[in-house]
Length: 90
Image (cartoon, rainbow, N blue to C red):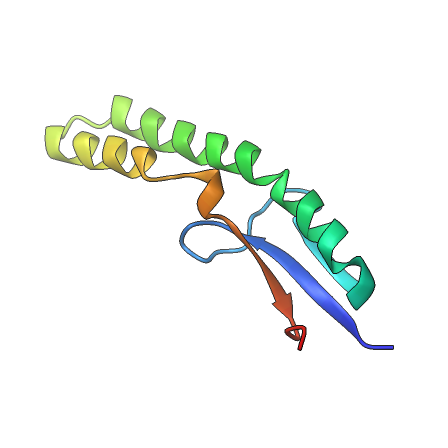
């Protein structure tokens, strides 16, 4: 039986670094359930990333750098997160 690795990735394609955001050895029939479970982690990660950018902006003495950090925070959306499956399901 072939198994698959599922990873939750953020808007930049990086693997989300939250407990449970990577699942190994998932049979094909469990992929939809695991995908749904992984996507529930997206909002928490997006909130944390936005907070990090906003904190950086608050402590940045450079107005342009602070504006860039606030802009980056505004572009982070949990709906843009994806679950990567390897190997892909045919």
